Length: 157
Image (cartoon, rainbow, N blue to C red):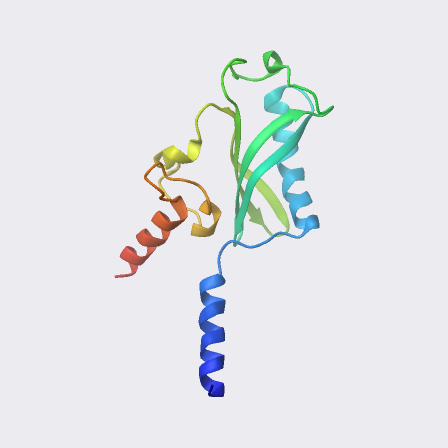
């Protein structure tokens, strides 16, 4: 294969793989350390974060998971700010990194339905598309990431 073709294909592969990135353990710790204090304040007690999905794209991150008591046991939801003890509870956090510091922009510690089903409350798909990786958009097999990328393509035209 000609050298130029190999270089071109490598460049294309790099461009398409850009977006959501894998976090180092230290970067993940920094991000979770930014989430924990606010989650604990809203929960009215010390918490641990259980991560189901953590997507990072550029200086934005989306975390989907749940919180448990710092002891690892069940939460006392009566101590929380506005969480109904009998409903499902999802942790939803959007963070932005400014310099070397992650800052929480949106947080819900007791979402009974995935907040990402209602992205219009955040102004639509406004963050880098990679943060939506793996988040279903409610349509048959569709993801928010693919919807975001389609919107970006339409805007460029």
